[in-house]
Length: 448
Image (cartoon, rainbow, N blue to C red; front, side, top):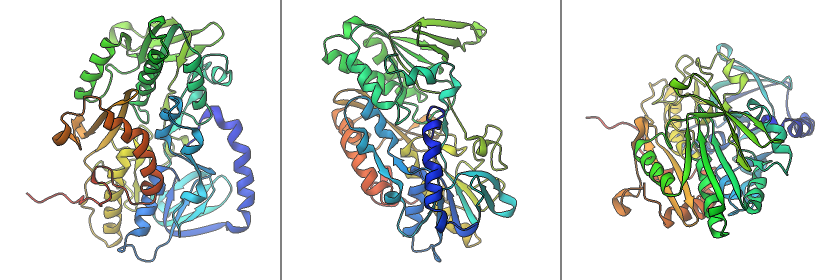
């Protein structure tokens, strides 16, 4: 259910057509043992792993998601950097849904967890024994006045890697830009892949250096956060890199308006001493990461916490009120970084605990908050940030290569070449577990 406000005029017509196409095979009411809302990385991965699990008897899984295409979203940074083609990051949803899993191209409108039921916008009611909620989050391009119109204008020098409809323009803008003021933004609040806003900046700087124009370009990184990264170890290394590469840091500056005609970006200064002052900055090149939020139909449901995320236990992924409901990925309240890598550790925990609940047992498997951000810092170099709850590093290669805050060529090729291959051939097929590789990890806490 990955979608954006800027894409709504483009999305709605295809959804109606696919609904008509499936009309003969979609009943007015349906029931499945396990219903998964969302056919993105989290939903497809957990479906594939569950389908392969011998302990899961009477296999009966359905995925609800209206989209026709499945995107490898971590690859959009590679596309925006000119390293990959967009078509290599997309596959038809029908080829990604695991064999034996039913796919309903329907849009959820309402959850009714007391009655184990879901209502859809198409008028189909779907009931379940167990529910997994994994629809991702909404990239809210409309949340910044002027941004949508700027993105529609290929001459505006405004672009974003956060949509398949805008990512190719990023590379075009990087190639054509030769001198002036470049600004890269990161919004305040929760976003998916919190390292991506600066990944594209570092890659642009690297490309401009290759093109011999770097000295003609002033660069600023404007972030709603107070530091370069949320994990102190990597924040320190990235701050040193920012200073070395002569990038201006506009910290606690949240983009609130884009005036592409006059080439002015307006920021709200979030520092306590600034009292919400507005700051206008002229630009010649602007890369924007839009604000992000839970889907309204999730946030307004009985499944959501006060912030709008699906309210689950941070260790077990089980809902805090409805014990036959689980959630993982970007839509969940799990207080970690929202990345595809996090799902590799969340999915086996969720499945073990779901099977326990099916057997009438208490969930024992525990998620430690593992997430990873393969942070590109230029051509041929990448900082592999890996960490768990509390911002504690949990590095896979540190014992072999040393601290992963040092960018390395090996890490760069993991991101550029290995991870995309693994994603399509193993990850979404239920055979990839991140730091554990191809072997399912033991997710049950050891007794002390």
